[in-house]
Image 1 (cartoon, rainbow, N blue to C red):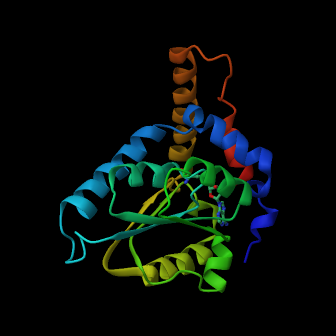
Image 2: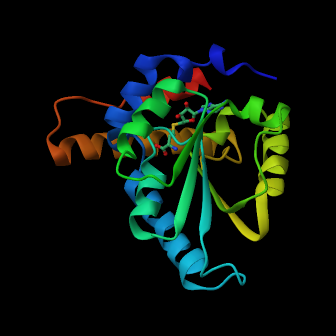
Length: 208
Ligand SMILES: C[S@@+](CC[C@H](N)C(=O)[O-])C[C@H]1O[C@@H](n2cnc3c(N)ncnc32)[C@H](O)[C@@H]1O
């Protein structure tokens, strides 16, 4: 299995750059999180997916970064508690700061590889969410993590993974990368930002 400490995410400057600038180079980032909110309102709060629905709900945020997803979820659900997990202690520090107004949160500093190997997830979650994190694993690690997530869910619980997917062929991948650059350019121009993020797609490719 890969070692999280060998990845660029273990470098504080890399994670800080992501937190500071992600809205400027992740295509439709806020839209993706709004879709998650709609899903959560509809399936977890609004519709009784099981008899537990009106009771306390437990959320797990895998690869939580600075806690943006959990912060959004707990802001609309007083009946929820959350566990925020990430391999990066620097990210978890940012998450602790962001979540300081909430006392119904726990933090787990562990890589996905450790989560799998040491079976770190209790079977207690109603909603497991992850965004833009699981694609950092290889295929075998993904399969093992999905099994761990499945086992961590209560019966009737939900898992939502917001992530990038591999293009079906090289020509489509080339277009995806162009579309991404175009989006970055459009955002820079429309917001009048001095910094260009058009290099990010190529950087992402070289790191993956
Ligand atoms: C692109 S950021 C996404 C953060 C947050 N979910 C968001 O949407 O803003 C990816 C996160 O996954 C974490 N991560 C990457 N590889 C990981 C691994 N192998 N184990 C645990 N966390 C990992 C990184 O530290 C980082 O916080």
